[in-house]
Length: 79
Image (cartoon, rainbow, N blue to C red; front, top):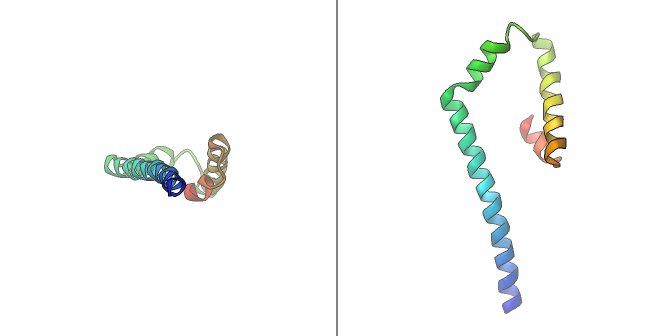
């Protein structure tokens, strides 16, 4: 019984970390939405970067973030 409880506690610790990451991600998303980051970025780079290159640039940045964080699971969520 003690082994089952210890195993359950280890799983609960892992879930707390995962839930914390999700809450922080939702918080960042909410803040960037409230501040108007998307409108700012569109206004700032719409004259500088051609629309044709935008998907390539986003893909490269997502790949670099995936390599920097050490996870392949992060790249699909960024794209």
